[in-house]
Image: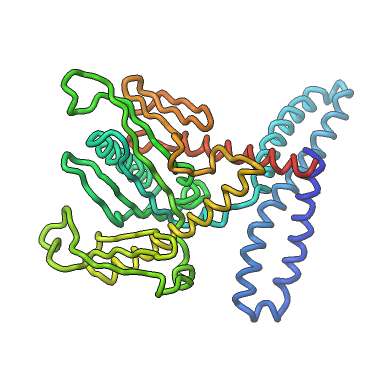
Length: 365
């Protein structure tokens, strides 16, 4: 392991000792807010420190086994220990390097997934419906809670636009952390159901994944900067639909950003949900502007999230999914469309982690 990473890891051991001392002090124990803050940090620091201690232990085991090689009576046992220690050290090094990466504070948050039909007319709207189903099935596999916030259905099925909120955790990250690399342009190549001559058509949808912000962030928005309109909801809904002006549309006047919600039965509930979406969109706008500035120093192929970027192609005749950012091709399109997204999500997360590690090393050469 490189000297830079060893120095970083040694700091975790020192910080663990500091935190254990602080948490034992009576004045800290009486301040519940500070105690909880330090406790959470201790949990994170201790996880890294314990893995680092194990790494150092296995380094010692490896050195000892290499010394025993020269003893004929111990050579066989030494070789077994060398193989075992070398394999575990490689695994631990990968884990520790990932633990050192800067964490995105939004990764643990719920996500709003916005899907909009693009070029391709009715076929694009049908594809938007297929993408919604794919993400909903993935969420179901992960055990997440989902609710549709707003929807605009097309005449032949599918959606012109749909927004769904997803909340839960999977493999140590929240819904936003798992899905944030889905933002961008998604292209489909297939024979539409409306095509009579069997020709393959290409159509597209755009996706934006937004991190839901705390209520405190919504409070920071100046009420005078908002225009709130109410209207009657449209679409499926049975006896409760179109009887009251329960749907809500909120416009943030300084930016022109709009959010709406019509899924709930009450105007109050729809207003609260629309405000959450609006806050997430404003936050994402600020994030995108920061990312554009950072791009001048380091271009992140995975993390740009620009809706105009064509990030992925779904080729049904070949059963192929291709993510163009990381040159990932998988010939399991039908199972992916059924919500089996783990291979895609993990590949994108691993690629971003490799980029971050490279940037850390470059900055500390």
